[in-house]
Image (cartoon, rainbow, N blue to C red; front, top):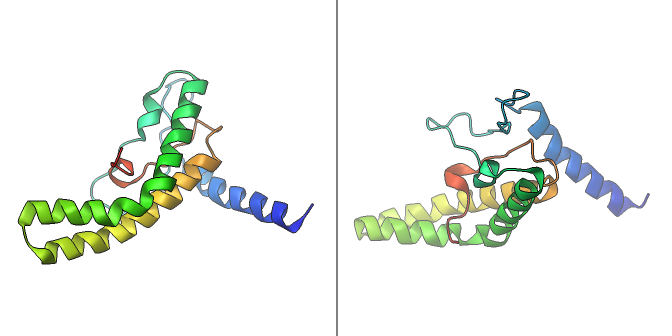
Length: 138
């Protein structure tokens, strides 16, 4: 195996092992998708990803892949959308600046979470919910 192949395999395992280790509420026969929630300190629990509502493996795999690609490709827009929302709410620059900084963190989380969705899209029994449902641009 080449060094690049080993790096890719290690990255996939690194992304998938926490998901499998921390999967919750996935009982056989219930039809619910287990979720991995690294944001346990948050007071509000995140709901599952939108693709988990689909019926059938093919539809869920396609939904998971598209959801992941959307977050990977558009995660960089979070600082700007959060800035815009904060300024629109308060009409002041300081909340807008704080919204921008908050968006930097959410952008990184959405991008990394989207990459995990893309890498693990064939495994539709595992969900990695993103804060506030991921990127809301599209």
